[in-house]
Structure formats: C-alpha cells, structure tokens
Length: 182
Image (cartoon, rainbow, N blue to C red):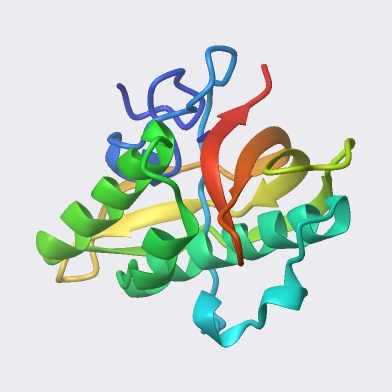
C-alpha cells in the first residue's frame, strides 16, 4: 500500500515521507500506507492465539492489529513486532520495513501520521489464507532529522481503501500482500 515522494505512487508506500516506501504486493495494488501512533503496543506474542483465530473475524481483527504494529514501528523505530507480523513474500511489507530501518539508522525519525482504521472485514471464510478489506485514514506524516528539521512530509489521507492478504501460520496470521485500491 502506501519511486517518488508521492504517497500515492504505485511503487512507493507508507514511508512516503522519505520516498522509499513501496505500494503493494499484488498486481492491482498501488499507493501508500502511512501509519504512526503514540500508544505503545503489546508484542504479538503477548496476544493469545484465540485473540486472532483462523476465522473471518479473527482475520479482520489481525488486520487492525497489523496497522497498529506498523504505526508503532514508525513511532519508535522498533520493527520487532512488525517483522513477526509479515510473511517473507510480502514485498511491500519488506519495503516498509526497510524504509523504517533506514530512517532511524540515519538518525532521523517520523512524526505525526497516526492511522485510524475505520473498517476491516474478511468477506469469505478463511482456510489457511484470508483477504481483508480495510478502510483507513492517516494524518500528515513528517520525516525529521536529528535537529527536528522536517526532511520531507506527506499529506493526510482520508478513506484509503486497502486489501491485506493473510496466511494462517498454525497459531497466528501473517500479512503476505498489502495493496491500495485505485
């Protein structure tokens, strides 16, 4: 979901403020994902397996949780929870992870960009995979340097339609693809 510095670029996503964040894993996916929160989250291991069961409701709940984990990675630079929430085949997830890691390694950070998920639903009963339709909005995201100077910024995004593809790993879900509808 969320190349250029545009948050809506087809090959660049969420870390749009730095212009290194890629859009989606699926062929039809394009656009950014800009997420950030001020509330620390518990790690995925802190949630018992029944919290996100292998059901449509569990898949939708995990999708909401994924956006919180992504938010927290932007805020803190700690990508531990994000890493356990994504599958190795999710190329856009890997690009988001790389953008966050590079930003903090360069002594920079993200400010703003809080994301609110308004809707998350898995329309079909999942087996080992699920598709979750999501609608979210995010505040303006700024990338700032060590002096607090804005390096880049991305505008707020309202009612972004996205799709997450998930895989059940026996005890938990992972994101295998992330794309924004155009």
